[in-house]
Length: 398
Ligand SMILES: [Ca+2]
Ligand SMILES: [Ca+2]
Ligand SMILES: [Ca+2]
Image (cartoon, rainbow, N blue to C red):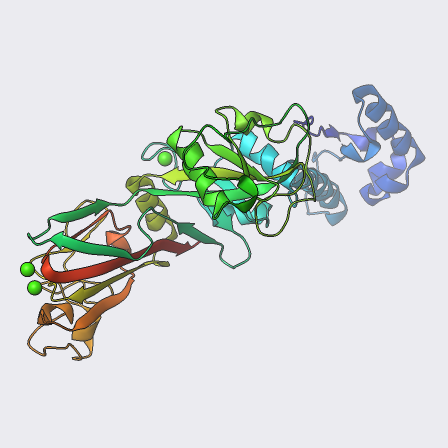
């Protein structure tokens, strides 16, 4: 880190110049003061504009703006310089600076605070509940929106088949909030900035240049080893080590990665795996307030929701409503109950009609005190019955 800027307050300027004693506003025109300022600047090894001449308040009986202006000017110079310093330290429109920030381990409550320093989307440390409570964690802040968007992805976002679980709540999935984000394009050379995993992981099938979903497969390979950083290069080549976070930038940034996220020739698109516990996600939701939502959908064929399944809130409690339903409902109620459009008007969810027709219940959960979804359970998918669940990521603005 560069040195913190130093300012010197030069007091009692009226004592060296009679003109200034009579009229403090002449301080910036006085050759005597100018000489003093330079001497002091030289003595402290700082620029002259970091020496702030002020006249002491002594026997003044009324407000003299010409006197105040010196004190205010000194203050303005110092705060301006502090601001420049912070901006220089955190600024912040390139990958190198972002890397620097992440290595400084600075935490702020949320992406909104980060955006004041840096409008570049990237991975940032946050601690929404301050000291104590949950530990600081990393999130990807999409700074292109105002307020910024944070999306907490989890491992069951794909539309997933439920079948062969007839007993109530017998199908169960806990959601882990974990994902990966690009932290930029970095030059590679020999020896490699990050050693490859090619040939040593079953996820990395076939030739890397023709591999399908090479970024996701490289993520799986890195994740299974507990590594945090991985790199994809030359259309699919996968690299990851335990120390990749320290070495990925050793050859500096590169502009040679392709827009598909799969890197380029000796150019690595580097990814960071970020992870948050349900408690950490909940702390973020609480900090940003009411601007979070999460989508849930169940498609059903003779498969009931009420009495057989549900989603579970941040405390692991079964929620009393479905996406789009009423949180104050007694049984699980779905969006269709809000406008009286349920397939069976005596039920509160389409799926509760429990017949041989494909139906669905879906909607967004926006009641922040329940978020995020921690678990989903289903049942009533025995012989001839089935369903599909889709649970979106949790998205917050702030
Ligand atoms: Ca905390
Ligand atoms: Ca059934
Ligand atoms: Ca059944």
